[in-house]
Amino acid sequence: MKRYFLLFFCFASVSFLLTRCAKESATLTFPALSDYYPLQTGRVFVYRLDSSIIPISGSELLVKSYHAKDSIADTIRDNMMRLSYRIYRFVTDTLETQPWQNTGTFYVTPEEKTVEFVDDNNLRFIKLKQPLRDYFSWPGNSYIETKTATSPYQYLDGWNYTYQNLGMPYTVEKGTLANTVTIVQQDETSPPGPFDVGSYQQRNYSVEVYAKDIGLVYKELIHWTWQTTPPPAKFDNDSYGIKLSLIDYH
Image (cartoon, rainbow, N blue to C red; front, top):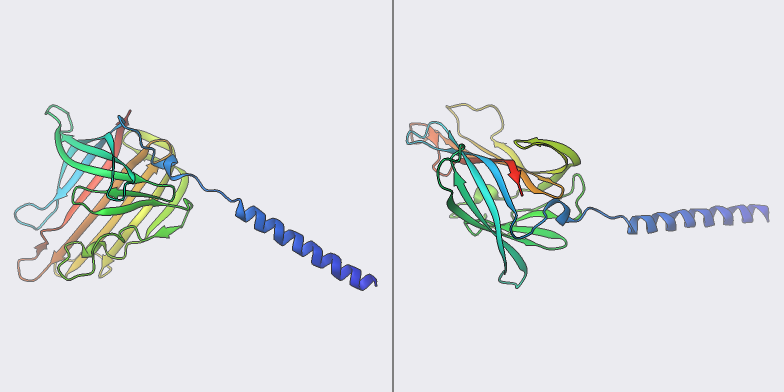
């Protein structure tokens, strides 16, 4: 009898622990996406913008620097009647001696489980996705047509965005921000290895950093293809790069 009672007691204890763990797992919560991508009309963000372009020779990437200002102008409804925010981008020189010039219009659609971003080429990206925790990944470019031979966006195919360093500090032009999350979107060199002017190679690297209660504070994207045929060797015309680092916001 004691043996059966002991077995019953052990079974009941294990069942209790499993039930308790299940309940704790069910109540596990993650930060809201709006914590790291808050949206409010009238907010303005100023960045240092370093843009990599190809000069006429095509043999190098030339970096030009600006200040960029993103202004959340108003709200609209997208084609699925979801609330979206319209953002205008203006640029000027780094000393801000020239007038601000409008260079693009973006749209951000925040939902409970995703934040979607449409750029001025009408490309839709899934910038954030629940659950917001380290190492969670998702296909952030899945709305973009990358499969056909004629697509100019083949290099965006198969990118898996991955959260890293949630809650960690990150330093930008404005200074060190205490609570951020980094999203590594792509880091690929094909074929792998150091750059060789005598060999074909493509490089795709993209990362974004968001700060709690602020939003986007850093962005770096580089896409280049080095072609050796036909000679002379040079970068493809669609090679480019962009780097944004937050200067100020209000």
